[in-house]
Length: 156
Image (cartoon, rainbow, N blue to C red; front, side, top):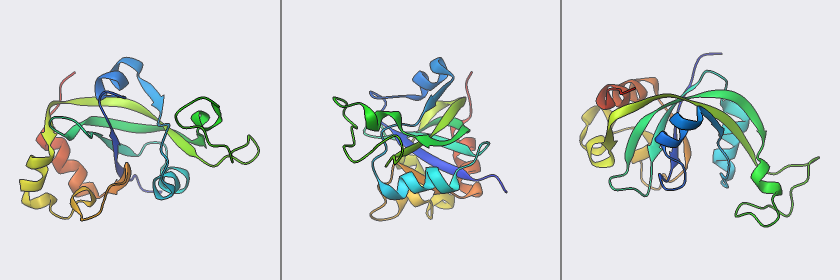
């Protein structure tokens, strides 16, 4: 199966590219959208590459690159009764939510801001910019992934 590319959003106050660099890898927990969950369950594979996007930030934008390092597993946050992401319908035998593990690859030298992404002609068709597109996990074409990586350069 060919490698695929993704964009995954996180608020930097919740979990940033710096947090992932420190932790080396993490489960991408807390996604509560069925389409995003289905991407993780059915379409993501170990080795797929990810643009790590800081949302609800100043400025919002692409912060670095991660890699899918573990296949989809039941999201453990759905079972924490007093947790923000508790799901009362979920059981160990029949979980509702799933997540993949991602590992740190590289942080960009600078955030590639949403404004820069919007102004780059070769990115006009990226899913991130399409009207109504708010998914926290979304596919990215290889050419868009490559362009974002080039725009961000790398540090560390």
